[in-house]
Image 1 (cartoon, rainbow, N blue to C red):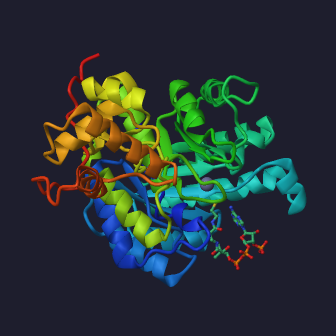
Image 2 (cartoon, helix red, strand yellow):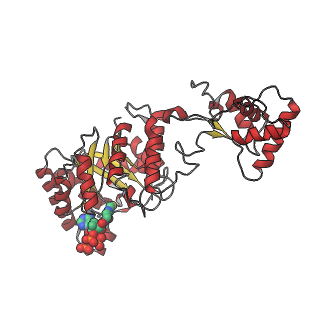
Image 3 (spheres, protein in one colour):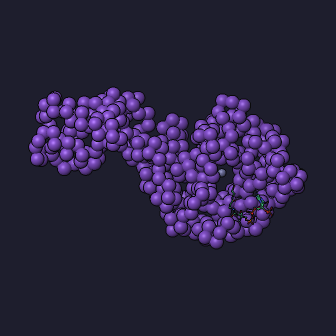
Length: 402
Ligand code: COA
Ligand code: ZN
């Protein structure tokens, strides 16, 4: 089933408290996203600030392969300002839950009228525009309200209906399943003679954003929203790198994604968002492909697949190991070989392992530089003919077949 990836790092990502990219950084992020191969780049909500307005216009005029998108409330001025930037994709949102309607003392029919007039206006102003309508907080809104608003929006010219799990409420396999929601929505819209693309916008409040997005995809969603590092409101959104790695590895999709650029993209976004990539983050974290425990490293040195189900080469990385109190003799021997120390007695190697464990118990990892000092110290040699090696701990990915 064809699937489009919408990246919202520049729009939803900037809704992360404290995150604001300069426009030259936004352009660099958009260029990299385009090279990675995402289909839609949501660049911002232009009425929010003059800087965002300028950046949306700049990126829209860059001739990227991806569709460049902007965000708008159901307000004509928001649409005018966005379209004036030259975007090819416009996301228009309005929440239709009873609680929000009551809060604003509005009737569903009035709000639907507002949504349809704005969608028709955008459609008439720019006939080739891809228009997405999002009933915010879709999954907690009354079914009837969502169906009414989505049906009318499609009749008015919307091509995409976004199922927004705005609060990260859905749980796979329960009566709050994104799979069931998307399947039901498609069926019901088809009954109403509406066949929009369905997008899924899944927040991560319960840590289930990716699982819910994949659930939505399996039920027929054609667009998945994601951001670099999962940036976004509260606990953020689906993490782009993990999503692409899983889709590429496990879903047999036709694609032209260049995931080798992911580390560069993440470095850029992390630096200018001011957020470190968590060490344990899947795919992009420092530890994502690092083996530690002796039993693991011993087996992984023979074949990394014994303890890895994702190929680090997918994102231009390599398997690594670390030395600490969990290490065993195999890891130490491998590391000694890496620094060119061969021919030590088994006793000497055991002593080195003891020292490594002692340091590990202090909560530190022994790197190759420190290992050299340990060897020199314990063997009472000054230089031991140790070769200068980089800190690269990588070992070959010996067998990629399954
Ligand atoms: N369609 C139409 N109007 C909407 C709306 C929607 N989907 N969502 C909210 N609004 C209205 C609210 O009712 C409120 O207007 P009111 O005070 O007349 O009732 C207004 O938009 C939002 O309130 P507030 O932020 O106080 O208004 P503002 O005029 O100072 O600023 C923005 C409006 C959009 C410029 C400002 O909220 C902003 O910079 N937002 C950042 C982007 C954002 O909120 N994005 C949400 C993405 S899901
Ligand atoms: Zn969101």
